[in-house]
Image (tube, rainbow, N blue to C red; front, top):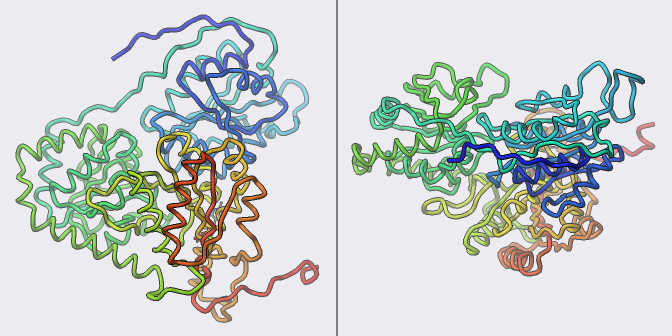
Length: 581
Ligand SMILES: Cc1ncc(C[n+]2csc(CCOP(=O)(O)OP(=O)(O)O)c2C)c(N)n1
Ligand SMILES: [Mg+2]
């Protein structure tokens, strides 16, 4: 391992210093939306051939691109948005970045609202500091005043974002540092050495094995710490060895692939159904809904263990029997070694068969509950679409599916031995506006893999200008829109309110009529096709994937799903301007 810090002297203006340090730290892309006051910064970015700007036309898209990149790359994503106003616009998506605790570095510039006029266009009010509004979504943030400190501040931000607990950070630099005059400073060479949390103690590993050994119905609760530390295969092997079921935290579908035969989907339903007596949480930040029921899913378990590198892993599971503060992957390595040495896997054959049967039953229940039994002429049912995308990518050797929608849940994919080769990625925070940009960042991070973004019609409209970023940079992704003409999930909740809308069957504010996605995409420069014949969906997806890869450009499939309103529901009569005034 390299411990020596190498640095070299560099003379340039402060904008060039920031760009030079990003490049020296191994950053290849800057996701951004520009503005006038940092003109010199963008001039430096553009003129440096070793880093590439990826432009988003709204800060939500910029953030989603950075988030999607960080979800796929093992590197941090760096983004820049314009002043307090741009920062404010980015935060709706930063909530997804923060929920996933992604290594995203945000750089903004700020005016001096103290020395002279205290109101400056696009800056935050002077009663709060320049990092204040981002703070709820950041692991750490810093304000930089001295241009001589820019290089070390940038290097530190990158390092801190990657150090457990991995998560987003923010640098706000006063814009007066961005002058034309060169200064001489040290650039720190090379990506920051990465800190990895340590190995667990032998006794911890023994206790974990013992807990899994003695369990009747063990459940492994998997979080994004598994993927972040690189332990996907290892955790699947541990589950297979001990015959344990797997369920995931909301933000994770790949710590163990959701297509793995032991995977039961999102944590809630399987726990209620299977009542595990042992839960081992690995790399999970458990979350709730702010009610007294937040922790009740742990009540069936006699033994509760959690594994991960930091406090976030332990804080939301009350009454833990074991806290293993260690790197997830290192723990899984040791656990698997011990299991192979001392715990015969065929001792768990019966338990494994039960677990496989349970996972398969739950998967089937989810799939059956999702759609009508019969085909519906003129529409494509959700599973036909999901299976077409999943198979299409699998046939290419495996690809990446990012998503933002509810009509076609990724956890309902068919099971595959070993979980298959596809990677499933969701917006961890559920804040709408992520899917359109995230898929672009994902492709930037995995240029050699086919990448599909399944984005609901409602989700498309939050950030449709991402079509332009895709076209402009010729990013070869396949957008697949499960178009149910509705905010389907919200309509379902309106139904559940058991009020006037349910009584009348007229749903207001959730039907999205009169928008043509193919036209919309075309206007931004992305070619599209509408598909309303279920028997053609596989062919259309395969053709789309082929064309995207061969021609190196984005495409969109506008797939007509049955209307996303509750059964028998119709859009309420629109209230027009005239009705309302
Ligand atoms: C920032 C934000 N605003 C509003 C919501 C509420 N919301 C959840 S899903 C959704 C619409 C999803 O529509 P679509 O993408 O078409 O999904 P589907 O029809 O498959 O449910 C909305 C408005 C949200 N999650 N985030
Ligand atoms: Mg929809």
